[in-house]
Length: 553
Image 1 (cartoon, rainbow, N blue to C red):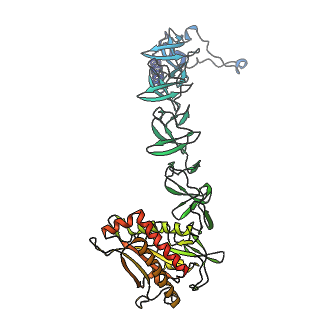
Image 2 (image 1 turned 120 degrees about the horizontal axis):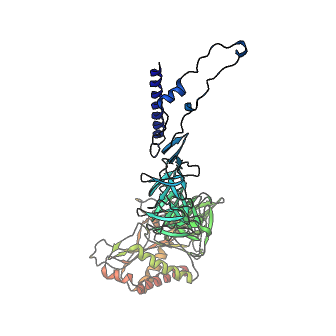
C-alpha cells in the first residue's frame, strides 16, 4: 500500500512541474522559468499530502462531539522552495536570482527586460523611451507597432520623440509620445496613411485635395500652376473647387476655367471665362452679351457704347435679328443684331418723299467669300468700300443702315431684302466686285444693275412692289446717277448699265441697285481695286451719284 501511495505522489509532483512549464510557454515568456529545487523527499510529499488522518478508537460519550486531528510533526512541514530564473506567478512574470526577484533593467540571453519595484516584468508598453514588446523584450531598433500605433527605435533602442526622421529615403514625424503621425497635417506638412510625408504630389484626405511641394510644404492661400493648369488653394491648404476666386472660377476638378462657359447655380447665370481665366464683362462673346459682373444678359435691351448701337437678347441670351416682337411691338434688327427701330407698317415707298435714310448691303460675308482671286476675297473688298462709304454719307447727314457690319453670313435670297423692307429707307445699294471665272481674264470695268422682272424668278416676299412702275423707274434713275458718277470719278471702263432679276433687287420694295465695282480675276484691276486711293475714288463716285438722285437731276 505504501509503495502505491509513494508512486502516486511522485507522478503528481512531475505533472505539476510540467503544467507550470506549458503555462509559461503559452504566455510567451521570454524564456521558460527554470526548474526549482528543494530538500524535501518524495516520501515526505506522500506523507504530507496523501496519507489519510490516523484512525482512533471510538470516543467516550464525553468526547463524542469532538474531532481529533493528528498532531503535525516538525518533519512533516514542506521545506522552502528556492526560486531561480523565470517564474510565472499568477499572471505575472518575475526573474529570480539567488531566490530574489530582479529589479530594474536586466539583460537576459541577449535581450533587455525591465522589472518594476515589485519585480514584475513590463510588457506591451513604453518605459523611459523604450518599447517593451508582448514578450517583455526591449525593441533593439527599427519599426514597432504597439496598440495600433507605430514607433521607431534607434540603434540603441530609444524611440524617436518630437522629431523628424528620414527612414528609407522618406520623412516621418514622431510626436512627443513617439507616435508616428499619419493621415494628418502638422506644421503645413501632410502625412499620408503610411505616415510618409507627401512630396511633390497630390493627396486626397478626408474628401479634400491637397498639393505638397518638393519640400513637402503644402500650398495654401495662393495660386499655383501645376502640370500646366492653374489651381487655387484656400487658407487651410484645401484645393478650391466649384467656386469663384475673385474674377476667376475653379471647376469641380479644381482647374481654373479658361476660354469656356460656366453655369453657376448660386447665381443662376452663365458666365464666360476668357483666355487667362478672367470672366467677360460688358462685352460680347459671339451672339451673347456679358453684363457688369459677368452675368449673361437675357430677355433685355443692351445699349452698347462701344458699338454705339442698341441690341435685344432673347430668353436664351442670343441677340435677335430681323423682325422681333418686344412688348407687343415688332422691332427691326440688322443681321448683326443692331436695332433699326420699330418695324414700319407702310409698304414700299412714296415717290418723291425722302427720309434721308440709305440702306447699304456689303455683298457676301462669313462662310460666303464671294469671288476669290490673287489672295483677295470679294467679301473683304465689299466691307472696306462699305465702311468708307458709310463714313462719308454719315458725314453728310444721312442715316445709314446696313445688312452687316462685320464678317458674318446673311442670306441673300430674302433676308437682306426683308431687313430693308421693314425700315423707312429711301434707297437700297448692294456692293459687289465682278469676276468672269477665268484667272487669265482681261475683262475690266464697272457695271450697275437695276431690276427687271423675270417670270422664271417669281417674287417670294415682294409680290406687289417688285415690278411696280414707280419702283422700277426710281431704281433705273438711281442706277443711272450712280453709274455715271462712278465712271467720271474713277475713269474706269464702262462695262454697262444693265437690268437683271437678282434676288436683292427683286425682293426689295425700295428703289434698289447692285454695283459691280471691278473684275478681281483681272490681275491689273485686282491690284487697282485693292488700293486705298482707288477705293476712295469709288466711294466719291457713289456719293455723288446718291446726291444727284436726291436732287432729282
